[in-house]
Every structure is written in C-alpha cells, then in structure tokens.
Image (cartoon, rainbow over all chains, first blue to last red; front, side):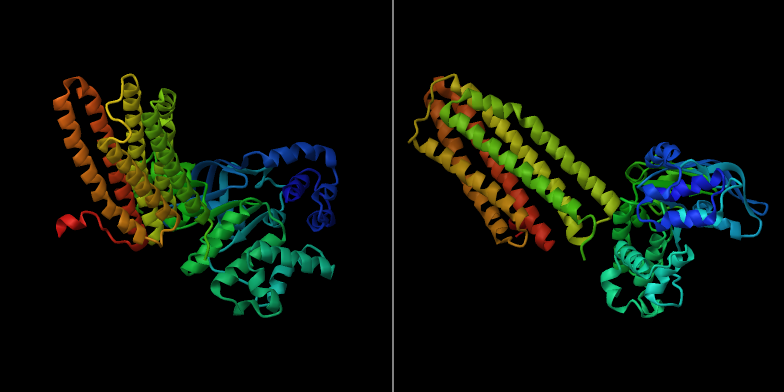
Length: 300
Length: 226
C-alpha cells in the first residue's frame, strides 16, 4: 500500500515509464517493486507519520464562484476523518480535490494553496491525475457498478493496470471482496451481473473495486445515503475495519454516522473550515457555537 | 447483526461488574476489620476509596462518550443510563465501607460493648449478611440481565434490613441510656448499622435499575404509590 504513494512521488521526479508504475502495484511485495530503494526509506517513515494529507490555504473556484476559502487541514493516516456541514458548504468539493475529480468540471480550479499527500503536491504539473486516483480511491453516493459480472467489476481495474495472470486476478478479486466484507455473500455467484446485487451489496462492491488497486486513501462521498439501516451498519462496520489499512475521509449528512465512524471531524460552512477536532470534542463540547448548532440539528 | 461498538458495550458492562466486585470486597474487609478489631485492614479499606472513585468517573465518562457518539437506543441506551446510576450507587456503597472502616478503627481502640453471641451482635451480623447478599445478587443481574426475578426479590429483602436497623437503633439507644460510659461506642455501632442499611438501599436501587434494564419497567416507589 505504501508503495502506492511512493510510486506517485517517484513519478514527480523523473517521470517513470508507465510500465514500471503498473508493475509497482501489481507486484505483491512493495519493497522490491520500488526501483530506487534508498531514497524511499525516508519516504516510508514520512508516509507512516500521523499527518498524511496536508491542505494549506486552499482556495477553490467553480468559475467565478469561490467554493473553498483558505482551507487549512491536516489529515491523519489510518484514521477516519468526517467532513460535515450543510449542503453547499464545500465539503464534497474538498473531498473531490483530494483525487482531483474536480479536474473533470469545466471552470473548476484550485487558485491558491496546496494539497500534499505524503510528500507529493498533488496539483504539481508532474502529477498524473489517473495515477493519483489509483492511490486515492473513491466511493460515491450512488453505487455505480459496471453492468458486468461481480468478478469483472473488481478485476477491471487490475486489467487496466496490465495484470494478465488470471490466477493473480482471481486472488486479488477475492482479497478485495473479502476486504469489503462481501465475499461470503457473492463467492458462489461471481459471474452474475453486479446489477442484480442489493443496494448495500453494490456499494460494498464499489468499495471492493476501489480496494483492488490498493489505494492508500479512500474517499467516501455520502456512501450510505441511499442505503437502509442494516446496509448502512455494514458499511460503517467495514469503515471501522478498513481504517487499520487505509486513510479514510467520509462526507456525510448523518451526524450519527460521523459520530459513530470517524476519529476526527471537520465542520464546514460557506466554503470555510469552521472547526476541526477529535470527533469526541466536536460532538460533546465543540468550541464554536455554530458547530454545536449544526451537530445538534438546529442550524444548516 | 453485530456492530463494531458491541465490544465497547461489553467493556462498559464488565467495568461496572469490576467496580461492583471491588465495592463488595471493600465492604467485606471493613466488616472483618470491625469483627476482628483489625486496624491494619481498616486502614487499607480507607486508603482504597480512591480506586472506586476513579472507576465511577471512568464509567460516567464512557457512558457520556457512548451516548454522544453512538446514539444508542432501546436496550443499549438503558444499559448506559442504568450504568451511570448504578456506578453512583456503587460509589456510595463504597463510601459506606469507608465509614464502617473508620468506625472500626475507633472502636478497636476501646473494649467491645457487644460480645459475639449478644443479640445485637447477631442482628448486626445478620444485617451485614443480608445487605452483602443483596448487593451480590444485584450485581449478578448485571451478568444475566434476563434473570430479573432475583431483582424483584432483592427489593423485597430491603425491608428485612430496615427492620433490623430499627431494632438495633432501639437496642443501642437503650444500651447508651443505661450505660453512659458506652454512649460513644453505641453511637458508632448505630452508624455502622445505618451504613449497612444504606448499602442495602443501594443494592435495592441497583436491583430496580436491573429490572429497568431488562424490561424498561420502572418499579421504583411502586409500593408507596399503591
């Protein structure tokens, strides 16, 4: 997993040939996958440091409209961070900045500040957004499996990476489905169409799909808003499990969900970060009265 | 379906049980210090009060955290609320143990006014036995919250302890009136009797809380409301 960002940073130096990059994720042992072993030693420690993502003075615009105003935020590795706030507060915009999903929107741009993941400035010219998204996976509000088999949904990303070995693909598919707590429910019908799964299962399939390419960070944009309470509970339990291996950032409108699953919570309002603290503090004794009004459902 | 925070609830429950066990242990030791005029044990009981206080704080803290972050409902919510109340009752019962130990310490410095087979001494031992048994059974309900027949039985037994306390009060007052030299010692024993009566009250409260935990039924003050 650490190799993922290592790869990313390697690409910012002399851009490594694409083949090398693909092999990096394909090889099971990350240590031998990285061609330059010595400079990476310090990188490894850097990646494991508590702060993985550092957002500094970030200004973001949709055309002339400022959507994020001087946001400063550091996100801890292997923790769940929740972004909360009323609609239009900028929380989803910020989430999408972290894997540059906003690049796809016309006129949307970062016009000030930086986002660093590990050592890499993700908006720097050398960074390939596609490569970045392999490291920073995303799960959306509405599950969006491909209209293909369950197996193929997860295998797709691996094939794109150039993995051809069928046994290796099968192994990684199983690993990802297990990681997403879906394996037991689908192992006997891997060739069935994914669209036949329930909403909760489809969402976990999308998580499995994201896990397959071994990201380091998992972004979740209201992953449970279309799910019933049992499916929601399963996703929440899964998030709790996944945080031992991934850094997770979740946008949610459910205060209960933010309180249950996250270690840290950031409250946004009108494009500004109002308060950021341990989830316990945000929900028990927030510093800002606006935060308290929002988490208690009186405002926003 | 098991949720990831089920283990937090299990830990919460076992913290309460741990606190209860420690309180029972302290009451037993305080009573032993009294029976055997053992000042060393009495001092040990007095010194260990902090530990109970810390457990009370930890339990309340966890209950607040759980309510805030886990938004519990139904049985989970009742467990957390009952836990906060029970930890307070246990802490108070623990304080009574400290009180008994302090009096045992003072009584040890003077000759005893009751012999072992004295009727008052028998009543005092009886009270101690019933009160401890009530507390023990109230805690057992926490292990097995389905089994709350026991809890209702505990509530009934509180009357036995109340009666013994009244009887001892009268007997010790009479003794003090008859032997002015023994007034101080009689008063100490009266307070010890009162402490045991209070311990039984706390056990009763916990038992009532256990019924509430299992059935969401509030049986407090049921007798008085007719």
